[in-house]
Amino acid sequence: MRKKLEGISRIMTFREGDVLLDEHANIRTIPLVISGSIRVMRTDEEGREILLYYIRPGESCIMSFLGGLHQEASMIRAVAEEDLEIYVIPIDQVQLLLRESPEWTDYVFRLYHKRFEELLDVVDALAFKHIDVRIMDYLEEKAALAGSRELNITHQHIAEDLGTARVVVSRILKQMETNGLVQLGRNKILLV
Image 1 (cartoon, rainbow, N blue to C red):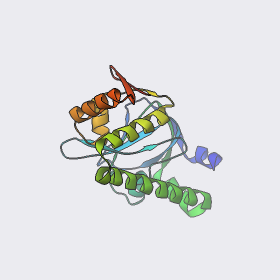
Image 2: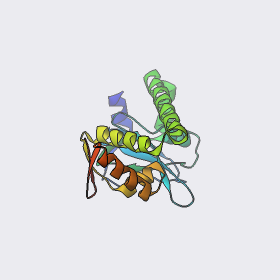
Image 3: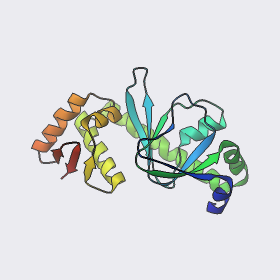
């Protein structure tokens, strides 16, 4: 499958913060992450964002698959979470792979299943978890993604990803610091 992908796609690199796909854009290619990660978000009319999921090495964006295959505009925003290298697969080649490769079809269905579960987690967190638990879960996921317990992140960035206010995040992080769960620094959080 790797040889097939190398034959039909090209490799592209992006820097941390680069936008790969914006909402309402046409989807002509599908990303498959080689290294780095992508943050996938949804934005409202006022520009507020909420994090839906991360795309890690070996993964792709099921929202792009579906939108691209049905020639629909993107409903998500995808941003390089860190320096990134991806295969860029043209949508017509994705369709061909689905027809000709049972391995690829299985990969897409497994990916769809994983993303669906992640979106259910987001809904559950919004509906049933207190914001302090959501913040700690978020920090743990960021630490796992970064491979470090020290995160270079602002309170504003956390608030944007979780769809809440910065003052709420700052208050809760201060409380977490008092409880010995984190150590706060300027644009840094250390998970204890």
